[in-house]
Length: 225
Image 1: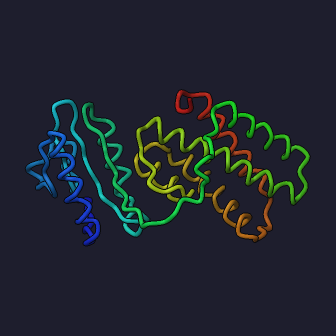
Image 2: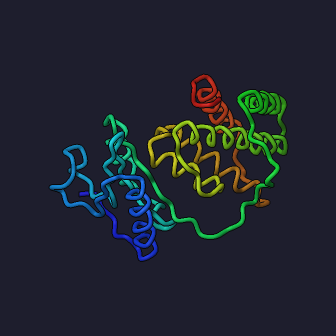
């Protein structure tokens, strides 16, 4: 049985979410018993299930601490996504923090992302050590822009703009595969070291290549508009 104990803050948010769904006309069951769940959810203990006329929703409420290492969300997302008429709503409690992004900033479109990918490949072709760092950062910027587009296409709300949060939430909800997740995690390790003024001894070419191949794969689908 897959479960997690709600913290006080999570439980407070769950009550608020329940009221919101009820106001939209859903029949809401908080912390449903096994007998109240459909067969495909029998191995899970969701925080809330909302039954509607057009669709049904499984709701999980997580804080930053309980989202980290939340391996139960991936099989739950797979089960819900495989069932017509159902969707998963992951509500992440967001500690108050100001966004680091200028309000005037514009999202990169498909052409803008593709242009960055081409620039990264050019840098790698002639890269010396310092240029590898520049290529890795530019590669991550292309990947992060693409991840936000993937989130929009899957109707996944991103409550925070921190890279690690974005990757973890998309993976937890099934929008990323395991291989994509591992490539992003390794690329994020390089990104974090560089932007915080550290130097990693190993070459970055392989992981940057893998990251750009992943981004290119997304660009060739309908996940990026």
